[in-house]
Length: 253
View 1 (cartoon, helix red, strand yellow):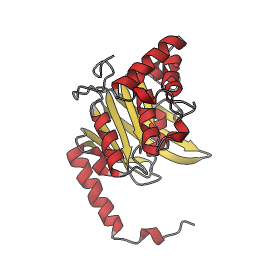
View 2 (tube, rainbow, N blue to C red):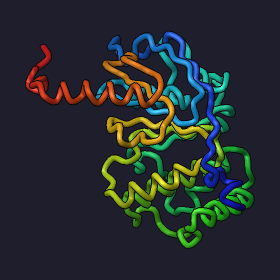
View 3 (cartoon, rainbow, N blue to C red):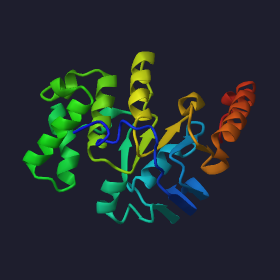
View 4 (spheres, rainbow, N blue to C red):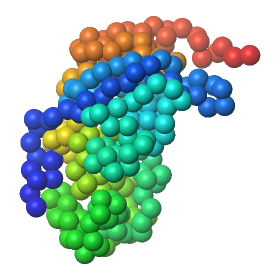
């Protein structure tokens, strides 16, 4: 299996259509996301915002892991929370902490698992998992125990497991948190070659170099959305303004 077949070779990415309509999400009466309406089919989408702005919650809704309290979220016309089969084909997600994602002891088992979820027989899934490892130049990782890997290597295992399933979009939920600079650059290189859509959630706008559209969340609502070269400078300017203030000393009552 070639890198192109695995959708990680050609940089001409294709987008997935995301349509959010008056989307709200709350927990125990506390609003996390409020009235989000958005439509985009950009190949590379960034979501920025301060901690607690609802970015990770939105990621889980888009992946179909949780349902909105009200409103709707459609990815390529599918409500992924209600259609598990479509969710597997449409979206893969990389969490901030790979230990929250990895469930099997060896790399081969982990990469095979998603393929089994797609309905592949065990032997076929293992063969395709080995082809995926080979395409990444990591065939020698097959029998490695995940708990012996570094944090960056675990992130790569998660990426390979997702790419093996060939979803139309990968959601990245703060994937660079805690990584050193070389490991971050290596993962960025792999992701830049992915043919499907990428939706990258981050608080650091430098992670979104080369992205098409950006959505800026503020306190669970869309503060601004549109072309990256418009939204990112506005976001950075506002964050710099806040950095010059002393709002960190304010206590909520």
